[in-house]
Image (cartoon, rainbow, N blue to C red; front, side, top):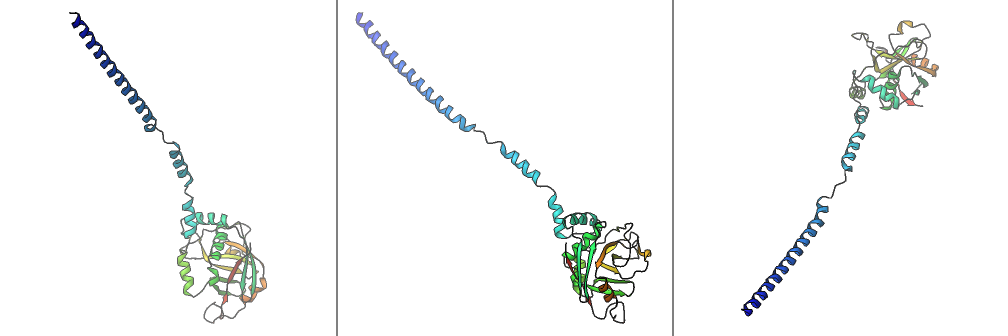
Length: 258
């Protein structure tokens, strides 16, 4: 009987040791498992910088509609509908008013009027695009006007087509009249009730006689300041006998001074 009790106690102590070892092992595994999971969580939840959306918004704001305006100026897309907007923008970037007109008979100095901004900007635009330097004085009416801006060469017509043959709204101003040395725009008299100017051709007044009938019919946009004797020389050339065209061309070359 005593022997049986001792045997039972031995078995019980061994079970407790196994249970204790098992519990120790279980707790160790759980601890390691928790430690492993906690080390992974910060990596999984690592936040991305929230700055990217803000940067994208800033980029979108900096891309403004200005490229469209630049495109208009670069591609020379001019028509009767946008001519005001085009030359208002062009005139702000190209404010020159002083010109030198060179011919084989001498030079003429001209000042363009700021009071006629569309005509001034258009004239500067055509000079900078090289249009007038391919033309000549093609109509001479002695004791009245000398008219230029045309040529019978094919390249001049191509230039006009490339520049879309736009027209300019009139810019009549009180006090700016047709007098000797006035630089004025030509226009069609038929089917043109708005009195839109032809930007490609111009005339310079030679006469000192009153020509008030031209005021508020043609836009005066500049004035000769020196070289009046050259105007008289051009007006005095021999014509071809069939028209008002000079027998020997008087070619035009413009230089922008300032």
